[in-house]
Length: 378
Image 1 (cartoon, rainbow, N blue to C red):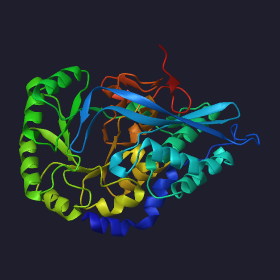
Image 2: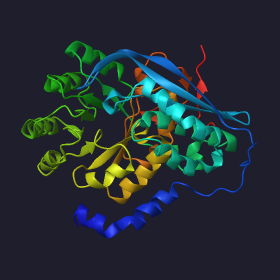
Image 3: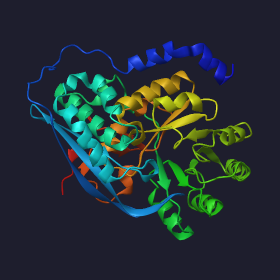
Image 4: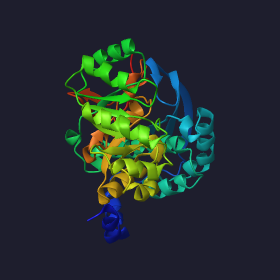
């Protein structure tokens, strides 16, 4: 059965059933709060990259992320926004979104978090990084108030998480070799392509790590389908196991043309932000890359997981340049996915928080309430 026919027979009912599983009912465990409003404050922190970060669109040495704190009844939830210029986001636009949401937050009953998620998403279109920061802080507050890690709240087993990849950004051959050596603890590598030296990037990594599985991410860098398919065919012959977003997000027909002619999976990245994007991608891509910053937080990401599974799509959870706050949040969902790409906190030298634990090629959430995050010491 073709995927289009499958979608038609599936209908809305199965997708809704999957989504409903994301919100299991709990007995009344400490779910009463005082009448005092929820307090919100935020700050910008500069994250310093270990190496210059270059993809097909841009390059940088630092990332300015916005951290949100929601406090009520002596409990503080922490969230993070990693604004992305690809989606017209800046730290300033993120703070503007937080200010717009503040009246909703101040009167929020946090136990109505699902209803609040819908109201938050409706504030305006876009600015999902700011919405993500608020959602993460709220869900962290929920977990801390219940004294439960979020993965336990959602009935998940972090030990079933897949191996995570480590990303090698576009650079000179010498620096790429250095990055590849530094990535020795990782069992899977992801290479950024879409520049002028795609083949050099892959062959250089292979010269240092000849046996490791490799994935590539073009970040919409190939604009011509004939060029793209030649590159993907070459990559497949050189042991690359999947390709993320080979062409611009709007070039769906060209991407479908490529998909019909190759034998390795193509994963949507920039083409998918929220659950509403997924149905139209189901016949074009083999899977989707869910990023909390694009989705607008954990609640929408969980809706995306169930919908994608209902449509037979593979699921990757990825990240931007993020601290341990956002990476710890994404790690809560890793037992539900096929591919993990959660290395954002490992690309920076001054992580202001600790939480997620890298072990044996996987990222595990700390066994602490909420996101399991603490301020870094030392």
